[in-house]
Length: 320
Image 1 (tube, rainbow, N blue to C red):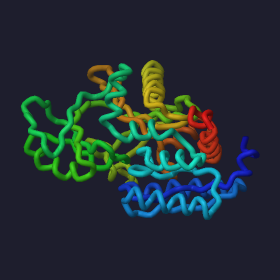
Image 2: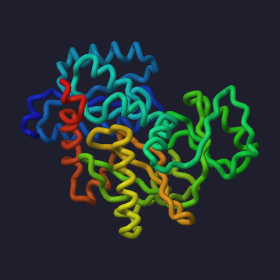
Image 3: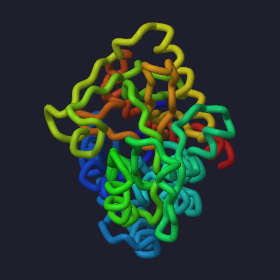
Image 4: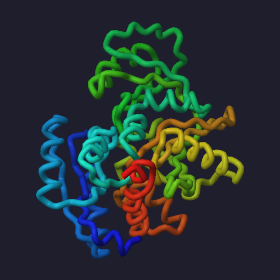
C-alpha cells in the first residue's frame, strides 16, 4: 500500500483559523517531516487564519488545484478542521483526505451533539445542561463543583471548574464568546484516561495526572504540569472496560480508522464516563496518540502512514 501511495501528490493541511492553530502547525510539521523522509511527493499547505468559510473554501480549492494535489492529509484542529467544514469542501470537490467524514467530524466537534449520540447508544457520559445567552439558570438544581466548557472547542480550551453560582455567572459570558453555547457538566472526581484508536482498534490506555484540578489547555501544553502513565497503571478488568467503551464511542460517532477518546473513571462509584471523541488527535512530539501507539509497537512513521491509508478506507471511499 505504501508504494502505491507514492504516486499521489499529498498536501498537508495545517494552521487554519481556530484557537488551536499553533498546535495544528506543529502537528502538520511532524507529518511533513515523516512523509518527506519516506520519499513522498508532499506540499506544505498552511491554511490562513481568516475565519471566513467562503474565503477559506475559495483559497483552499485554488491552492489544491495550483499544487495539483491528489490527497489531503488533514492536520487541522478545531474550527474548520475537525468540525466537518474542510471535509465537506473536499467531498464536494472529489479530493481524497485522511480521517473521518464530515458527519462524524461535525458530531464529534459539537459536544452537545456527541452527548446525544452517547445517550442514544447507552454510552455513559456526565450529566449536563446547556446554557446560551438567553438562558435563565436555576443554579439551585446544580451540584457544585461543576465543569463549564464551550460546546465546540478542542485542546481543553475554555474549560473551568466552578465552585459556586457566583463563579458560574462570572465565567459564563467569557465561555459563551467561543461559540455561543456552554455545556455545564457534573464534575466527576476520579482518574483522567484517554484511549487512542488506530485501524479501528483501541491502543494502550493512558492515565493523565496533572498539577491542576482539571486538564485544561495550559496544563496540556506546558512542560512539567502533567505526566502520563502508559499503559495506565490500572487493573486489567478496568483497562478492558475503558478500551471497550472507547471503541463503542468511536463507532457510535462514525469515525474512520483513527480517533482519540477522552474518558473519566470515578473511583468512588466504579463507573466509566466518556467525555468526547477527537477525530483529528494531535501529532506533535508530546501528543498522546503517538505515545500510545509507540507503547503498542507502532512507531511514529508507521502511525502517519496508517493515517494516510485512512483516505482509502470507510464508506466515503467505497462510494467513489
